[in-house]
Length: 384
Image 1 (cartoon, one colour):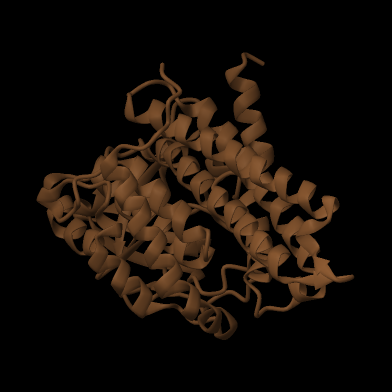
Image 2: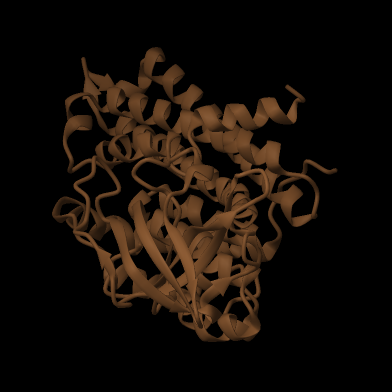
């Protein structure tokens, strides 16, 4: 396949539009939200009006009729300025709405997707549990059929977008039985916000992503209609594996944006900051740091665009997605550390964007598949 990842005029126009929005609207305001640990509802509403939450979905369901590449381009540009806003979009689209788009019935799509695509509502994906992170097959949440209902019991943790004022639903994985070999049959259910027995905890106190919403969820005899089963009963495990494969490309784009944002801020600072009578950017030690940072960001961009191109061409992309996610998340951490070093003491002050980027970077090596899991996937694809 071709490795020409130059953008079409339509994709480039979208990228430029989101870039301008990020710098003109998000950059001046997000620091205050971040420091207050407040969810940026006004910014999210504007993103909804721009159509960002509907980018990869068909127009018949309120979407923009675009593709996954368009979503990832938007994520990279947002994360160049702020990752809290970017992860809100990523989780709302690839984890919240995408399962309904891929596996929902026509009735489910028409009921839920229009509000999710408009940004008027957010969806969340309830997979991770307190004792079940990377081992998703160890799910302990259960769903038992009772007449025309499913009754759900269990706990989910670290769930993004699950407790905002505009959260409409959470899709939840639960064990619905056992296979002949004793392994769990995992299914997925749509649980609307406000369902009796469905409790959303207070927001976590986090190291980073402080302007995004992340909470623990508990389910105590939560009843949902049989019609809220998402996809086939017992196919939930396979469904979320595909969701995570695609989501890794999105997280890679987000990580690339953070890495590029570190370059942007550090180049600006290196030109403005003077020491010993000249800009610190005149020093070769700083120049070499910045050259390496720019190289990493570029390579990460090529990696996620390659994975996205393969996915859109309906070619195998699991290994490329894992490589992109692994590489981009690790270089985001490296670039954030180097950007902080270039800024010196100011890099440790929260008023500077690189301090926020430093705090936001580490979770990228953990969320949606740890670096260790990505290496396992790559090795497995090599036949090991």
